[in-house]
Length: 115
Image 1 (cartoon, one colour):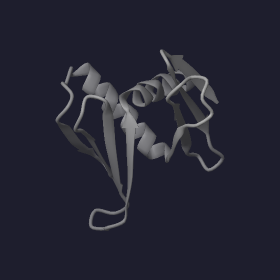
Image 2 (tube, rainbow, N blue to C red):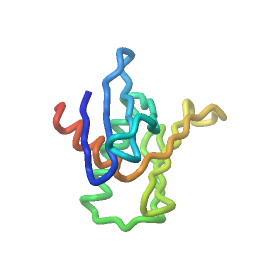
Image 3 (tube, rainbow, N blue to C red):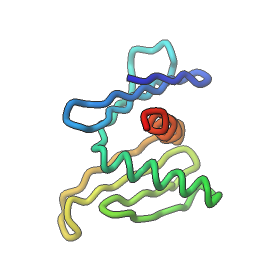
Image 4 (tube, rainbow, N blue to C red):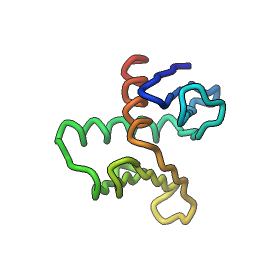
């Protein structure tokens, strides 16, 4: 597990036994209540790659939408990233996540430290 405190919030990550990643975001660093998401490795990896590209190309938030493989990433605001994962190209079955920019940034840092 990794933990990062920044300002008043805290972000933690844990590698799960099934190969996924659990992200936990605490509004207050000392809070017990949290927001939590479980991402498959493939989705987390695609998100990290996409975010690095966004930062490198100096894209401006919001109003970014891009599809990479089975994932579509969108930034409709300057504070959150929406992720939509399709299981197959024509399947109505999808997973959705909305992560704060802080959580995405910390996920990038966490994956780089693990590499």
